[in-house]
Image (tube, rainbow, N blue to C red; front, top):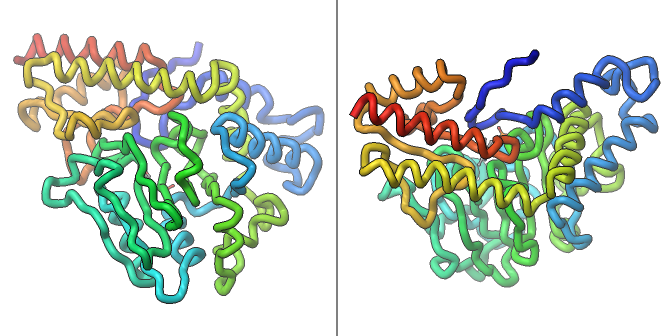
Length: 362
Ligand SMILES: Cc1ncc(COP(=O)(O)O)c(C=O)c1O
């Protein structure tokens, strides 16, 4: 029997067993073709069906309105740090950013290379321990767009309410919480995400862009970088990431089969609730370093009384078949990442382990 452990890694991360099993079963030969899906032309009928199903399923499960185009690109969310400003650049306009931590900073750094960039809100002085309230954010009259990072994967903070930016396009990096809750699409102009957390394995990047915003996008750049290049052939301007897209399609089938977005939302709430209760109920022995109202449901960061104990905790958790609990190297501590495919039992097992570990070491 295959041995599966609870994998709390921040991404790539755990995938549903049924997705992996389905892929394994049809890996070598796909649909009676005498070859795998990954050996055939991406312009053929069989891959075309997979590609279209992936696009349709994402639209259906995430509730993406018809007023938005969905693009499948490569280069990860990281390439979007550059592509967003390159495409949405406009004479006399400034790129505006909410600086919420490590990932926002990377997006800001790339935007600066493209054009005038301004940070409208930052919590750097407090080491990025909270997200702004919607009322704290106001887009400038000269803004090309306002960019937010919906969930800071390293810092463990997540937006709970998005600002209303009026006519200024709101852009979000949703790499680490896409498809974990319903999104008010009416507020957004562009959403992007690497697929490798909530959607599937690495290799595919999702861009969901409002059609009127797409219409305004620039084209004076190498073809791949222009969003408009990817529209006519439904994200097959060049060879798409066939394996990643196929896996995402299987994953979306799984999401639908267990109850869709509402179920993902519910599970995320339950998993996070279990872990934050374990932290809050430890009498301060385990400690969440972030503002309670900004706590991420995807990445639960926590500290123990000392770095030695943190190291021991991570080591013993590994032996107890819970991996990936080390915090990001830039901040240290512990981090439990719990994306869509993490069963609620994973959070329960970890909470139990935390209580036992405290008893043995306090
Ligand atoms: C919030 C966020 N943005 C961007 C990235 C970068 O994504 P990619 O590795 O797909 O370029 C990550 C990766 O973890 C992330 O968590």
